[in-house]
Length: 108
Length: 178
Image (cartoon, rainbow over all chains, first blue to last red; front, side, top):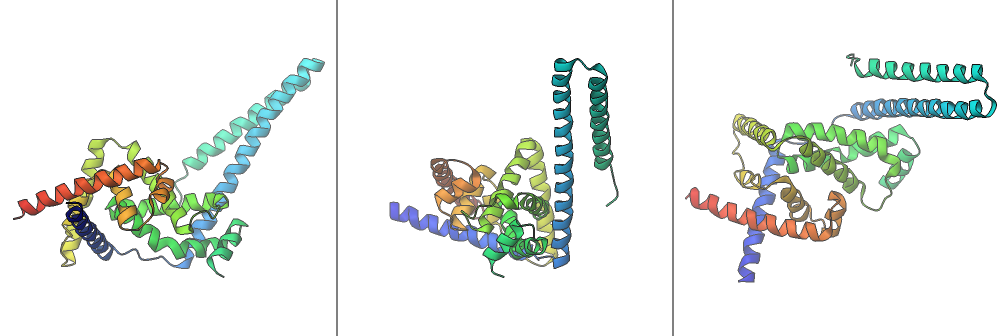
């Protein structure tokens, strides 16, 4: 019984392999030329670096806000506090705006 | 440069090495995605996405598995994510559309459409992918568990269930076609 089932399964897997090989022949996976890979690697690396830069900047902005709050609490220097808050907020808005423009850029 | 050197160089930021590495595995990756999706158009998109992900994550490749297995791990997970985002009805409609396009393309090339693929397509992806990984690519249950990020026991039961289901559908199909 088990032997019969094993034989059945072997036949089944063989059929599956043949079907998938035929699919491969119908739609062959031709490899693009080297320029394609160089371009995708270069574009992706650029995009990743840009994203990391933005994230780092956003991190520093948040850190500045937190630090300035501490500074304010410690020294009650209102002018410095608002200056830092204002600059951080401005930088944050600029980052968001730049990201938005980047996401809606339709040029290839 | 052999593959290990290419990987080391790519992880150090050598773009040429990374391009070469991806070019070397491109056909294997795309062919794998074609087999699990049975949809050349979707396989094309997923291949691109996999390449991008691999470029972003190249430093996290730890060499525990072959580079090709690492790529198909990324590709499989992207496909599973893609399926999760679509509802069942939409998935079914897209599958049927792709199937008719493929049959039409096969007809245009004067080739017969491999009917067994339709039997294979009756299996849902969660069963079809482990079955293909096991019985087409010859991966072990542990490796499949790693690729699909599920437990080894789950892989075994899915492969077993998929085999039974496939056999049943195949026999039904044989009886129907006479």
